[in-house]
Length: 277
Image (cartoon, rainbow, N blue to C red; front, side):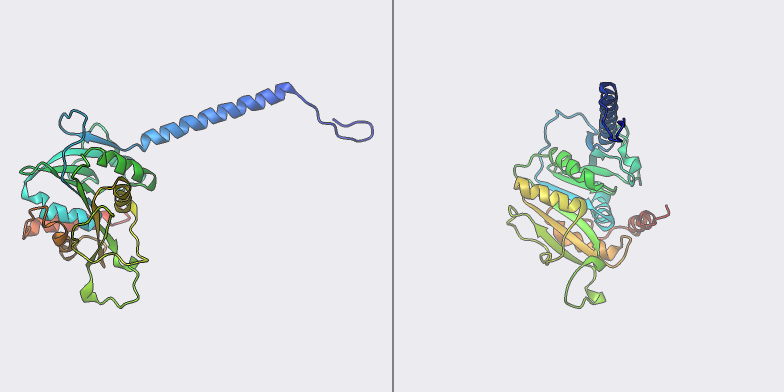
C-alpha cells in the first residue's frame, strides 16, 4: 500500500501468512512421504529359502564375489561342483538392477542377482555371489544386512573383485604378459598370509568391495580383498584363474571346469557388458 507521499507501507495479513504456512506444511509432508516411499523402494533385504530362527548363521569363512570375473570364477571353479546349496538371496532395487528387487520371488537362472550359497560338507563356509549392481546409497545397507546374517566370532571374510587395468596407477611399465594380475587389501584384524602383493598407493578400491572391507575394518573382522586387474571387459578364463590362490585353502576348487561351463559364463558376461541390452 502506498501513502500520499509515495511511501510504501507493508500490510500485515494473518490470513496470507497462515495460508503460506499451510502450503509449506503440505509441501513438507508430501516431500517426507516421497522420501519414505523412495527409501522403502530402495531397501535392501535378505530372504532365506528355508525357515530360520532369526539369528545369525554360524560361519567360519565368507567369500563375497563382486564383478564379472569374480562371479564367473566362483561359478566355474566352485559352484559347478554341485557341493553347494542356495540358502538365501538379497533383494534390492535400483535403476540398473530393477529385477532383483522382487522380495517374494527368488531370482531366476541367469538373472542379475545376489545369492548366498552354503557348502554341503562344511556348512560354516558360505559364498555370496553378487552379479547385480548395488547403488552407492545402498552399499551401507547391503553390508549391514548381509554381514549381520552371519556370526562374526571366528569369521574371516574374503572379497573377490575385478577392475580394468586402465585404472591401475603405476610408474612402471606394464607388459602384456603381466596382465591379468592380483592385488590385495586387508583389515588390521587380518594377520594371516595373503596370496598376492598389497595394492600400491595411490590405487584404491571402490563400490561394494570397498564397502565390505570398510565395514569389516570398523567391526574388527579379519578380511582381505583381492582385486584382479584385467585388460578385457568380459570374463575370461585367464583372469578368473588369478583367484585360485586366494581361496584354495578354503574352497575345494574344480581343477579343470568343462568347456561348456566356461563358455556359458563368458557368453553371459558379454551380454551383461553390452550397454544396449
